Length: 200
Image (cartoon, rainbow, N blue to C red; front, side, top):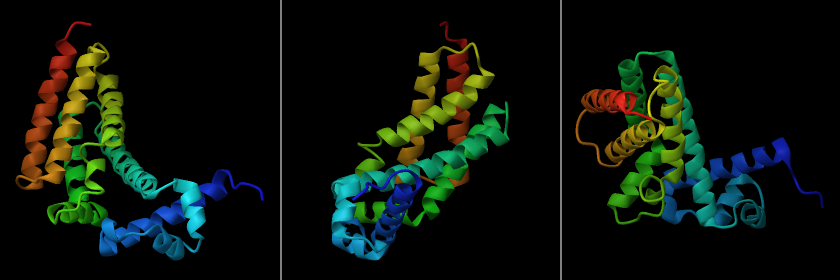
């Protein structure tokens, strides 16, 4: 039997991840079973295991896709504001906080965690390498174009700090989104300005 590759395989993986996402939203990640995902996706249970290896592998694929969507939107928000660092930072942060608050999967993750289950929460917190790497990369790429003389390490630290704070406010919101975004955008400007003044 010929192994599926390229676009057909990606469609298969997308179908399985879609099924897993729907089941997680409906019943929580704890209730998701590989067999149930296979049935919902219209494939065999073995196919799901072949593609993702385990439930943890499926969770990682699901988390990565959500992150890719968020980061794509962040890039769009940043680019739309060109060299206006304050406006771009505010738009990207406000969008991320708002989208996360309305995202049914994020809601499920946070609700489950508050109920004592945290199978998916680490993908937003302790195992958030994908979130931090992708989102920080988008920030560095954008602001680096307008601060070409900035120290790379200071710039990376600034971007990483902002992303970590945004994630913390997604997990534990403190106040209205616009107020949080205003405060974090102001902080971003100060951190990026410091990076611009830091000698290489």
